[in-house]
Image (cartoon, rainbow, N blue to C red; front, top):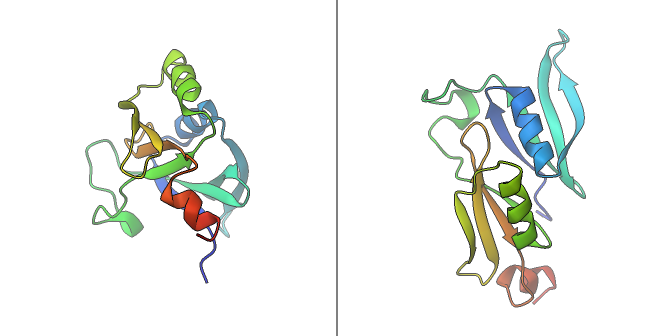
Length: 141
C-alpha cells in the first residue's frame, strides 16, 4: 500500500548550483550515496518528514535531451508544500529567484505559484487550504 511521497529524482547539470538553489527554498542536503568505486551516485535533499529529493549529477547540457531513466520526458513537475505561500514567494523574489507564475488559486482551491530550478525543472509551490480535496483525503474523507 502506498502511504506517502518518498522522493522525486532529478538529474542536474551542476550539483553545487542545484544544492544552492534548493537551500534558498529552505531545503538542505541530508546525505550522499556513492558507487562501489567511491564516485558520487546521488545526493538526498530533505524536504520534510520522510520525503526527499534525489539529485543525480550528470544531467544533460542545456538544450540536450535527457538520457537514461528520464528519457521520454516523463517528468512534469515537482510539488513542494508550504504553510504560507505569499510571504515565501515574496522572500524568493527578493532573493533573486524568478517567479514564473505568481500566486493563484488552483482548481483544487489551493494556492500555488511556479518557479524553475537551475536545470529548468518546473516546481509548483503549494499551500493547502482546509477545503481542498487533498486535505479531505488526508483526513480520511
